[in-house]
Length: 153
Image (cartoon, rainbow, N blue to C red; front, side, top):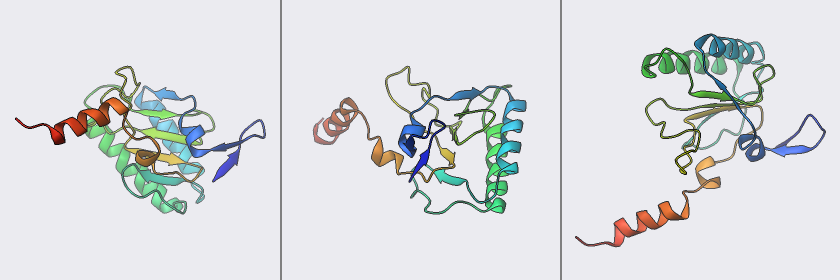
């Protein structure tokens, strides 16, 4: 599914996903983001756990509220820092796509290691696609994996 961008151009989920994002560094910023999502929780947000089948329909306001409560609790419990830093949003004022990284599987979410780490969850106004299929491991990682499977000690 594509959506009209601010300039009238259609943008796909992957274009949005690969676009610019701002980090939610402070917990009070995360609270403000959750408030925006809940305020606009009118059945137009898709909740996607990366690795699961992408949803084909948007979440209800009740599902969104429960998800926000549960993921907020998880982040505060398992991200052992006095800052957030694991949530990224395309716009702090008018969010359309939110990436939430799993505190236990961070790797280098900024991509500086050369290996792209996918978020654990995505909240989006646009129906998501299977990110693991759309963004397979790099060729070097595939070669590494094949070498493990074919090498003999």
